[in-house]
Amino acid sequence: MKRERKIYDPAFKTKAVQLSNERSNVSELARELGIQVTLLYKWRKEYEEFGEGSFPGKGNLKLTPEQERIHELEKKLKDAELERDILKKGNRHFFQERSMKYEFIKNHEFLFPIEKMCVVLEVGSSGYFKWKSKPISARLLLKEKINHHISLIYFASKQRYGSPRITFELNALGYKISRITVAKYMKELGLRSKLSKKFKVTTNSKHNYLVVQNVLNRNFRPTNASQTWVSDITYIQTKEGFLYLTTVIDLYDRKIIGWSLSDGMSTEETSLAAWKMAIKNRTVQKGLIFHSDRGVQYASKKFANTIEFYGVIRSMSRKGNCWDNAVAESFFKSLKTELIYGNKLISKEKMELEIFEYIEIWYNKKRRHGTLNFKTIEEFNNQNKIYQNVA
Image: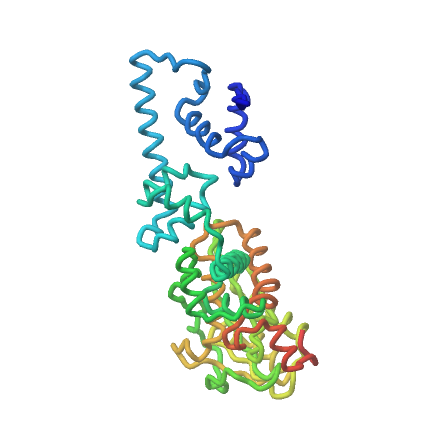
């Protein structure tokens, strides 16, 4: 018995095409509609070419010579725009192996016509469909799972993590994979961590207050908490002018135990405000060294008298030597690289919220620190059983 050919009306075809443009999986939609996926792609192509003039039924579209010329120009323009978009998204795949091009096509089927991507990426459509129909090997399946986790970790870190930290996250999830392999996969995925810029000095050391010796002497690895704290100030640019961020870091676990974000650079707004938060979060131990640069906010009598009241040993960097306070400056470099550089200027109010989230949620709780063997601060303290006086 001859099978009856099913006829679909123009409204059905139009809605099917419009729905396919909203879906990420065209093949699945075709199955749901009970039609061949090739037919749906044919409808998509016709709709893209003729728009509302698609699916006229029997016979061809009736166009005047002028309409035909306009239609041909519009078609060429759409074709050029489509090639441009494919090139823009797929440029890193051109000099990769064939399977990488196939992977790109597979991941963008919902966005571009398969045949067009094959032409632009210079691969045959028959070869692509043959590759796609092959069962995925266990090795390739594992790579896809790892790439999925890499992307999740990368974007969860707001593009802050490079291959070393992502490797440790993957290891924590149970994947035994080297940093070199992760770096290779990230390159294939087009993922790279945010790049840093040169650090600029903020504080003013031209004053007549008493400065003290460099007691710390670059001993950045204390054996216990509240043994050495370091502090510094940097500027943060916003749409409404500068904000000034002051931090106090415990060198033992690199935690930001005190910080202040202010409009001005007075001692009360900067060093004193950050100090007050620090002593609320951690107990001042006997012999605690407090190190900073020679800025007026740290050399002023008000600040010097305050910390000396607690029996703290003051320490200052040598003149013009930023490496004497390298840890504090390293934090500012990380913050500006991971949060600020490359982003649009925002309001002071929005920036205050961003800084709060970065310090209190990301840096102090989630970020993996190279100096802690790529552990989070919490993991490091739990491993070393440091509970007393640690907030």
